[in-house]
Length: 321
Image 1 (cartoon, one colour):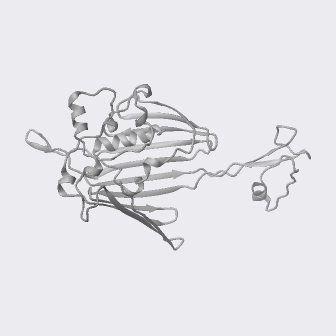
Image 2 (spheres, helix red, strand yellow; image 1 turned 90 degrees about the vertical axis):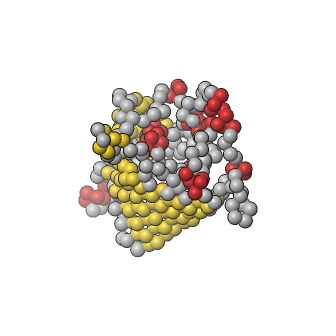
Image 3 (cartoon, rainbow, N blue to C red; image 1 turned 30 degrees about the horizontal axis):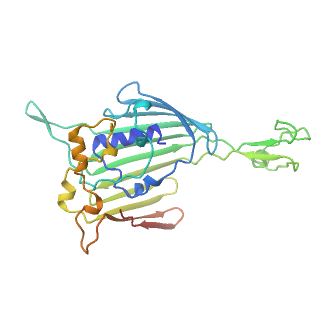
C-alpha cells in the first residue's frame, strides 16, 4: 500500500494542478510492487501539517517519524476507514490524455491584481535505527515548471557485528571474548584477529546510505515533459524526457471528466456523474493518428553523466496503451 507521505504528495500535486503521471520517472509506476511490510499511524493536527509514524518489517526491522507541511490545505485526506482501497494502492488505470498546464485564475482586490503566494510542500523523516535524516522540498515555479530539492544526511556510525553461538543466545564466543566485526577492530589499532567457530554466524548491519543532495527541475507542456537533475555526491548530471504522440491542440486544452475509479469519493454517485462517465471516450475509440494507429504512444529516455567517475549511461522505453 502507499505510504502516508506518498498520499500527501499526490494530493498536493492534485491541488496545484501538476500532472505527475506525465513524467518519464513515473511511466511504469502502476506496475510497482511494495518491497516491504509496513505499519503506519498518521494524524493531521491542522489542515496544512501532518505527522506519521511507521514501522517496517521487511526486508529488515526499522521505522521512522515523518513530518509534512504544505502551503495549501490538502483535500481528500480522511480517516483510513473511509478511504477506498484502490486509492491506497498502485493499480492499473487508464489515464486521461495529458493536458497543457493552465495558470490559476487572476484575483483582484480593490482593483489591484493579487499575486498569489508560491505553493510549496516540505517533508522530512528520521529513520530508525540508522538515525539518518531525509527530506524533500518542492515548489511550483510556474504553470509548467516545478523545482524540487531532496537530501539525505547520515551520521558517522560504524558497522556493527553480532556473533551468535549455537548453544547460547549471547554474542560471546567460546574463548570468552566478544566476537565483533574484524573491520571495526582493525580500525583502532591497525590489526585485528578473530576466531569464529563453525557453529557461529555473524550478522552484519549494513551501513546507512551516504549523505547526498539532489536538485531537480521539471517541465510539463502536456505534449512532452523534461526533467533535469543534479546529484552533489558524485557530481552526476541527468536528463529525462517523455514525448506523447498523436495529441492535438484540442486534446491538450480539452477538459475531460475523470474516470469513475479516479474520483476521490466514488462511494456515491449522482445521475449526472454517471452520465459523464458514460461519455468518457475509450482509448480504442479515439481518433486514429497518422497511419491509422489507434491508442496512445509515448517514447522517453534518460541519460546521465558523472563528472567524478567520468562515466556515461542512459536508458529508453516506448510504452503504448
